[in-house]
Length: 402
Image (cartoon, rainbow, N blue to C red; front, side, top):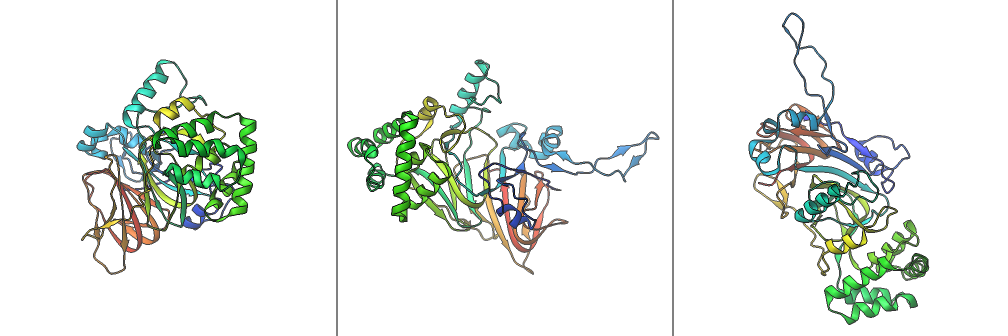
């Protein structure tokens, strides 16, 4: 197994303190939004696995200091040896999941992800039209879907899925803003799917200047009312005049406690607002944005991808097994997330699996094989590698679903 060196992404919405506090390092003053663990080409983890170096006499130099190599390169050199034949047969010669620490200091963009068929067709279409992969108006970065799961390490706020149109209408009407009345009427006058579609379409297609005025009035009213309206005042503070503030009022507001999780499937609009969590997803970067962002919003494609149905957020809690593994059940094949709460003197947790794994310590001190992990440290374990964990702390296990 290999200790991972991971990249921290400095996105503007990131917390300046949460990841440093977990790692036990001093804040830099800059946002530290996500720490990526895995083999995504955008920021692959690095490992220092020893390599035999043969000198000119044909002998092996075992004292050579290993240089760090991207995990992508290690897997590409021996996909079946690293991932296992079954994983390669199902997903191809790459690690099918990406694990992250995510630290939101301000709201992320309101967004949705495509399903696998939509991603494949969208990617093929943009490739055929010759849109550069790094173009700001490019929608599909790859041909994969991006289901994801976020598990809270601290109290964690977010938006997830549409609430019932009548509830959204009540929330908007309570603001007393005249320019919101057409949206309120639409939400009350149509069947659920049509109501949500028409209102989101109207919000995203409104005149920007008029929308900025409406959002400013709505934000002031949210600030005045407080209570259930307070989150939208906070969102508006970070994105003044953004139509996404009103779109956010169509969604369920969710507060996770540590250990609780949310699963985000295809077409479900969502946004993370505040908190630190462990996130796992299929290895993709396909995001369609609805608002709360200066980035490109492809409204026609967004409206084609969004699932216009009211849903309950469905907060997940881990299901314990006799082995001590607490697993978060999700309906996807690319990943599985679980955690172990280890105690000093207890029997080792047996973690050997036929699939590749990334193990992340989030509390205490955990020993994995011969490696000691403290909070924020992680290891990569190739398929079928024998591994046990001991110590006193919390260990998250990311792997491929059985």
